[in-house]
Length: 326
Ligand code: NAX
Image (cartoon, rainbow, N blue to C red; front, side, top):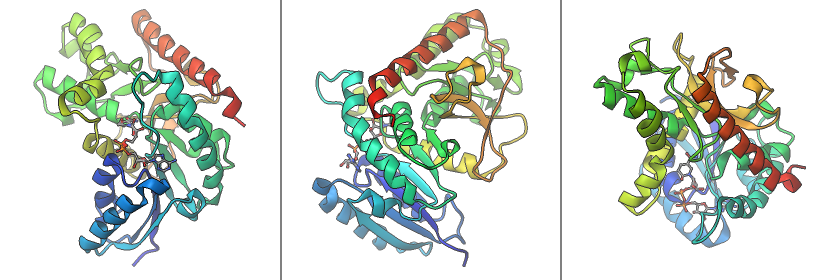
């Protein structure tokens, strides 16, 4: 058997992790011949619950799962890992504004950014815990890990957008490609239907209902998380776990020719975004865990307004955490 792939998951006793760990352990993501070692991080009050999750992992008797470590120490969790999926963070409490949430979660990602220095040289990091773009910005700025290894999750928004476009056009999901979510995983994100395609055609040539695209579609994607909470009484979990695993798969599989996927990475100034912001872009990967931004996409003046709006939101989040950026 090949060398094991080591994967850290934080917030490992939480609901997203519960939909993620078994799929990671089963061989579904890294292949049936690749042993997997899981390194699970929690905070002390959740260690008992984590013990139960570990028992269940063992009770699945996955041949690919060769080791499980459960810890409340980030340095232990990240030691030697090839992937770090940072799911854990404090949830938003009653009456808490987004800026308050950013402030309470910031220090977690300072510590985890430093602890990531223990990871393997090839580590890739995906931040899921909200506000994920700014948490990722904090971790990246407090770590010696190269900046191009950090991602914040936009793939759930991409999946939501794709699914809504397929339903509206009455086509299968495979026929909907080239979906990018620009900017921030927030309700100011801009799901780009102008550059998305259905059967290779720009979406507005297939869905000829501009009012639906500009209003209903954009707002429904932006507010889908809140709609799930309203219906389910709890935030998206299985779909969020699935989306996180999609990011891993998107990076370790060559992107189909002509298509792209969405993830937020450190800007080098592409599309006029400030250098260093963690911004949702269209990406391609050759399948070796590296990725490249697709440049040169055009936008209408209306779309540019949406783009600038979410860019400004990320700039103001960065201002809130400026003291934590090392
Ligand atoms: P849960 O509350 O079920 O689980 C979170 C877990 O994180 C808890 O077990 C908690 O003990 C643990 N935790 C807290 N601080 C920690 C720390 N410093 N180190 C390690 N573990 C820590 O939440 P869940 O539903 O699993 O959601 C997790 C995060 O994902 C939340 O921040 C949530 O807002 C975020 N989401 C992000 C999405 C995205 O698209 N980026 C979508 C889904 C989800 O809302």
